[in-house]
Picture 1 (cartoon, rainbow over the protein chains, first blue to last red):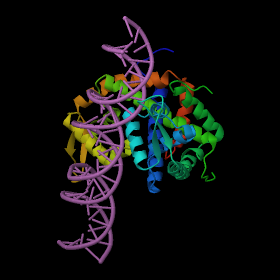
Picture 2: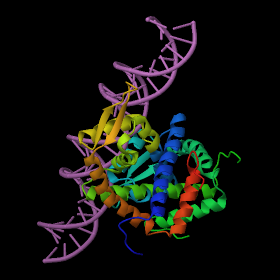
Picture 3: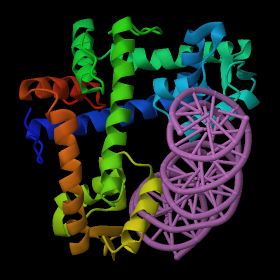
Picture 4: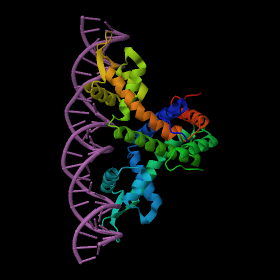
Length: 152
Length: 152
DNA sequence: TGACGATAGATGCATCTGCATCTACATGAA
DNA sequence: TTCATGTAGATGCAGATGCATCTATCGTCA
């Protein structure tokens, strides 16, 4: 595809909407969590990845790949999660530099309570606004904006 | 539409993609600006709104409505923009509490230089990935997620 | 083996954000 | 006019983020 310095009007509109909508949705979801005295979205992302990883846990650098958080961000986020008893850090045998992060029972419970609120936000903010087909269409379009693109 | 506490799989996928893609795109655009020794995206948003408003300028609370930034955020952002000479604050006659913000020539010039980089990012990250029709479809879908929804 | 570049993760420091609150002015009712 | 309430915008403080750099360990190649 041709490299253009100036984006088309369609591209500008799509970009602007994407920026605005994503900010608005994040803000709404964060507000809902705050209203329930729950931790911020970033904590959910990490707890979610760790819960999916199961007992084996994940290395911090794997969390970085999966969540797009910066390295220093993950480092400090994990420190907070550990301080709250939501995750535990385990020495890993075959790499003295590393550690494995595993979610604790309390972490799973916190994630569950967050999901009750977060899931409701998703249902209200997105699920209630578009049909299943429209949601699939949007996912497909967004997938192609990812790097690397998701083609489904 | 029925209120559901648990979102559909389609809604979850769409949400997840939206979160990931928007974060990735913002990050890429911010990186491009940094690489050009230019100010962050937030500055562009404000300069853009002020440029569109023209000589009349805008009140800070109008900027808040248009940009979704928090009040304290706009307050401090404008202080930085003023310190850099990109905007000027004018006393407004009929409301002693308020002020009008107007972009300066230097502000317009900075916006122009930012757009050279930012516009290229939009063209590459979005314009080059989807056709005009697909972009329109995405804008329409995203518009319905806005609050209030944009129906076009 | 020993040296060297690469990788995992932590951290000091400056800046930015979020929250609550503050000041100043405006508006409307008594 | 006076007082209560509301709105515009600024700010002190605590916590979070970004950047650069640091330490520790790993892997490789002479």
